[in-house]
Length: 405
Image (tube, rainbow, N blue to C red; front, top):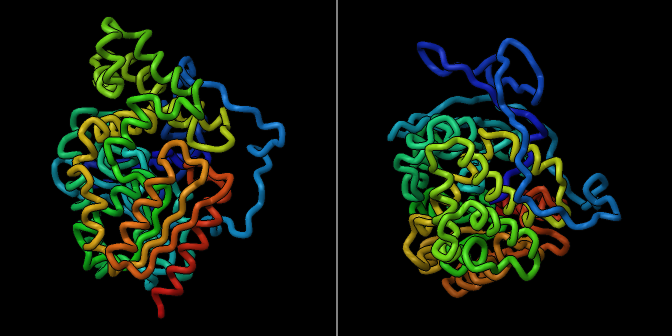
């Protein structure tokens, strides 16, 4: 679910009367706070009223993180970018980078609603992979964004539709088969759903922070205070926002997700933003081993990121992910021919490590001969955790070698 850092960079596109035309050939990035001909209000003051303070960091791990053997590949620019009309009023923003003749790989972002950033291209070796990234319905640069048109962003915004979008994008780019589908958190859910729906169009999966969308996982994170044991301040802030704004706390305390949904879809914009800040602030405050307050302020102060993240995540949570209960584990037999690598932080408080273990065991029992599960010590949920970066880059490199055999 966690948003990846944007390095305070946003992708800006201009819509002409004829078509959507990327500025300066492909993309243009504007630093937050910068002013130019495209001056716009992209950020507001972050509402930290219901965000718990981070734990201590006496070793300064935020500013000087521990060094692992592997890091992200160097920054790279796309050679192709555009918008794909997938129907239902949605146009998905995508770009392609790396080796035009390489192994096709697609990155599925978390949330739902988190969107992508240029950083995620760097999990793949650009000499080996043809790298495709895109924003899912209602998110990031895709149109409409939930912060601009809430109702339109929710039209046909379901897991089966997102699964279909991935295949539309594959066919639009004239890709015969995905060599690698990489998904983290919600992206792991979507990757599994896609692979099970299109088993002949995927060669391998790389999953980070596995979430199987079981009712126990949803309740643990958002319903019954499962995170309280390790993150009591964060849970109390999350639930206190509803209590402080409720006219019927006895009813709403039993359905916190429903209460958040009511506020996130309110006619009052201040209520929507406050609810989104409390909801996203809760998740960000438990997503990493060392929490950087500046990152939280950045996301909570950027409505185009904040609103989609909160709205889409609650939308999917209250609808059980638009999946049949137990679907992803029950259907692992359909993907037993694939290579599956899993990287999961040992200290992940958002998506519990037991989900990764259950998935790996189910795959093995179904007859999958390639299941590579790595639990990473000292890592939480976010794919910015140095240990997870190391594990994911090693896994994508290894899969590339194995796919060539």
